Length: 120
Image (cartoon, rainbow, N blue to C red; front, side, top):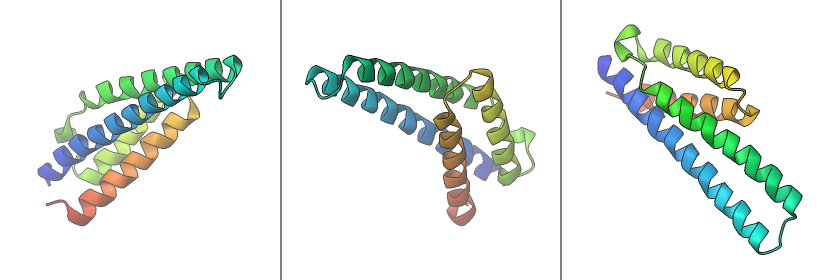
């Protein structure tokens, strides 16, 4: 159903934006811990660099979701697989941290399961 494909893209984008927000939250926690001398400068710097790279990668993937045309796929399952492949390729090209691959995979599975169980 065409509605399922568009719903998938919308929900998937919302889920990825939520993950981006989580990364920003963790960056704030890292900053707070450093200011309160709960972690060393080394740990703070490593965490900061990792989280910034992760946030940048997820933000780039969110932008890429907007370029996906739902009409190019016969059904939501085919589209979900293609989106996963597309974003995994982009994450690899961006040299994203491995955790980004897990975010992509988990969010696709979550949204697809919801759509297949409850969508239209």
